[in-house]
Image 1 (cartoon, rainbow, N blue to C red):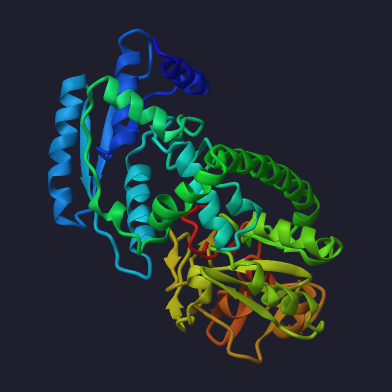
Image 2: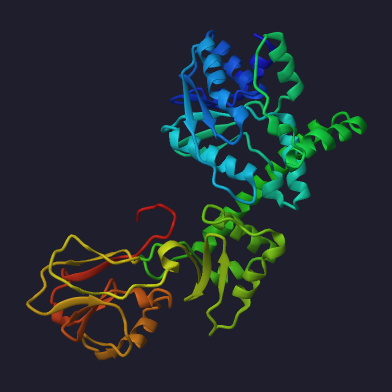
Length: 440
């Protein structure tokens, strides 16, 4: 085995028990070398089942022959190949759109516990760091590409990040490998190509170890980002606190706990918390957070972000997205006992648990002026009652209300009139969950 074989095997050791290894095969130099290395290792070592995935973007005529080239490479090595055609949505950055489509295809096809092996190398890491540095990225961005991360139901692993491209090229030439060249890689209108073809070679003339040094800096920044993540997790333990309404399973934080941190730790905490939920603004566009945090107690500030918004209510920060941001459709629905559940347009579902007595039962939302008879408390104004129960303002218009004719008898999940009798009879609402694809 070559030194490269040993290094690759050592790098992949933590994933030797994976259910499968799938190679992201573009047909270019890097992925072709990775395919050959793994096929060679599989003949000497017990490895997870190997297969390859080629994503066909269809963005240029030259790419039409790449699936066939990849098929020949895989057939020669006895490795199964899956070719996936994707549609790339047009946008400001074709590179970014193609990358999103490619990784979405990979994520969709990864089975439980499978590993996607991608062939990015040390020069790619240096290029990524320099590119993001020039865009003013923070520590998270400057940490560049991690060796491994979650992807779909499996993991993405980059086992060649410590290997320079020159070593991959030497391996390919020594083993007589063939590969395709992407014509778009020569187009210096793309920022990454300009860095790769013009800037990095110039730096290497003055500093021969420039790529290695940049990649090493990316690794240091990766460690710094890990420490910032661990600090954010500690802060989250205190900031999550106990939400007042257990059935309102929306992401939220205790505002006082967040504001008790330094401004730098506030931003670190919010970046960590919001990262799975939305694309975040750059460092120059966090005024929305300051405005939200510092607004008066009687204000209802909102910080709008790319995929949702933060609101402040009941002393907490709430993340809202999806249906929560859409106009609410008025309803007036007949309601019976023990129903499977009524879908409320853009507002989750509601059902009656137990047997309703005879009556003219129907569901609707607040219109103003409602009141409710409560055990031992007489008739109470609904607005004041919701204040007492600390129901956030954005929830109140959405609460399903149960009426018998014109009389309010129950507020979903909260209170009900003694007319409904035993506690086993109640009105239960499952609120919408936003855009996270989760089920409460």
